[in-house]
Image (cartoon, rainbow, N blue to C red; front, side, top):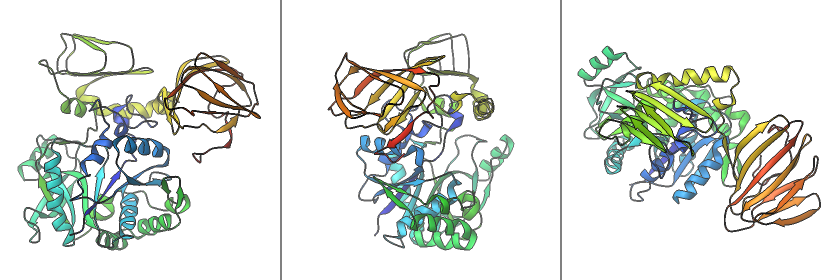
Length: 472
């Protein structure tokens, strides 16, 4: 019996969990639930049982490629990483996943997973996948339906229909129901409906046939994007022009709500898509007052609340109930738990007013490490920079600023025009305006330095790259 081919889709931005989750570091890559790993890493670990699963594939946005590669390497999980040039919703991603799997085996059973879900029981999840795979091998497009624990209004619902004879405990899908109001959710639960988890299992050839029948434009664009893809380091970069032709639509609407082959397996393991801060609070450990905290936090007479503090600052809350307080080095969110789902609207307002904090963290991750702004003012900016061992910035120059680099940890290899010099701890080097320069870490430990920029303009777009090993 063939192994199940797991495919993680992780192209979302997670704006409902701002300010911890932003475009530059979405929630699936952040450690919001576990102190030791991201939900993306947890999802990848969930499908490593070699008796059930084959090699992992990941579809992600091109801007997140190095975060994905770094987190997979940290978890020691090999994977094929396919890069979407732009977000075209889940139908195009599922089409690419089916085509990619069909290259090896046209009847491969593919499992589509979200990167940001929290599951309390991995054994139960694997058992559910194995049970649903029976239906998938018989030609059904299966999904896992979560048995509701409350009348949630943030999830879609599925009405199970007649039993599927090929797979015990599975059913045909009678109908899908969009996110209801509370009364509608209560009625659906009374009727035996389950939450739509967003997990799908199908044979590659079955999904491709259904896409051809119901969404041929999506399939055509995905096929051309994969056929014309380019290999870039350890990534498969889908063709941008072809992928842009895919209609922007979900797999639920494109196929699942139209196909005659949809099936569901109701499951009861603990599950959350942690889509809001309220949902994050519900999956974290809570004290005797119902509070969940993370970071340097102090509470007095506070109940039923989530307080999340990043960085060195202390976040203190006094006399509040059922609130969310999220403190990061450059932004603070205070909300009632009940209305935490409206954070997405808040982020849209911040974007409309051109707040850089809407999408960018103070610490920005790059393929070679990260940088973090310490201070900025008229004609100057100060950054802290970390370069991983073997990391190498692009060969570049600036038209509007000079830079001073002071090494505080490790050894820097600096290219300055025609010279290459080593700069050690407590040493500095000056890079004049217009000079060609590059920073590398030839050592075995992370390189850390302070960069002081001085000039008429210190924006990130004043970088003229001449050579870049990361293909930017």
